[in-house]
Image (tube, rainbow, N blue to C red; front, side):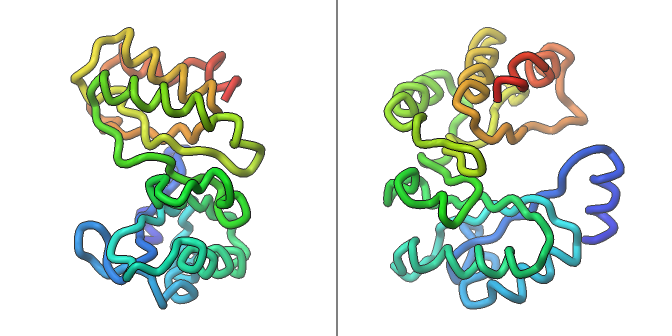
Length: 194
């Protein structure tokens, strides 16, 4: 994994990894619950820049109990790893998660359809003021480039994510992205707002 991280870094990109604050990930692979220090040290050795930390198979342990051990473990490594907590907004993380994470998911997984994006836009209007430097509401990854919406819908999607200062996590295959979609994702004036 270290070699892969080095390759990703050589392309000017950040290297992210996925785990879970449960016994298993949502896909049924081993989670980090109880292994936070071991996993955080491994991520730091590999050169990980970003950790998405999900919420499946959590044994009904409250998020305020499950997420802090990974926060402490990541901080102890000395490597700055962006900690993206994902508890789907169930326990209103915009009210408390800034103490533990750099960002927190505020909804269920995004879908690449305009009605779903509209719902997120409407719901984010109620909580967007809860973001602040070093702590951001995360309405989920960007769908730009995944086909399924119009050019204008993807532009609108990107504009709102920038306006909210949400993490701009590209959720498409960069090897296959069209010039039109790349144009959206590289709007420097919007990224500057973000």
